Amino acid sequence: MTEKYMSTGRFKGDEHLWEIDLKWSAWSGDPGVWDERAPKTYAMLVDGFDGGFEESGETVRIRSGPRKESRYMEVVFKPEGDGVRVYARVTEPWDSVEDLLVTLGLPDRCGDALQDYLFRYDMTVDGEPGIWEEKNFVAQDLDTAMKEIDLLEDHILQAGSEAFGELQNWAIKQKMEGCARDVFSSNPDMQKLKRKLMR
Image (cartoon, rainbow, N blue to C red; front, side, top):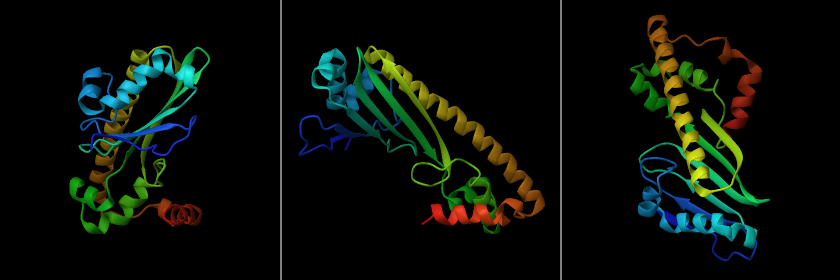
């Protein structure tokens, strides 16, 4: 499945919901990628920016989850004045503690300390540790909108690279210190919040 229209049984005025898989990225500013992977979704956006949004007053929501990446994006296009309001959020959750232990070359006994470290990051919308960014703007044309959203994914890639670099430095320190849990893990309020998020 590279694209699927999810709004079956919709009524006039309901939003159009698409789920897409661009394979290597959550978004792209290249029309060729859309023609290959999600042509119907892209055609709806082209029509919308050519006047369809203004005429119908309808909203298009796109959920993107590339099968080759662990990154997710949700973008909403909604008519506003003589332009289109665009809201985009991209999320990159951390790998599981078990997978990260292997990646970082840490023993299993470091699992609790690693969990504490990951919990310092923002929670994703799914309640798991990760990083995310969002953008809210009005666009006059599709090309500008697509490129602005594409830049958002570029930003999260850079942020993810920097965060992983910090994690690698932390792992080196843990190897030297024997993976002792820090004071963060003994904070009752933070532990209570963790249990609530993990329900």
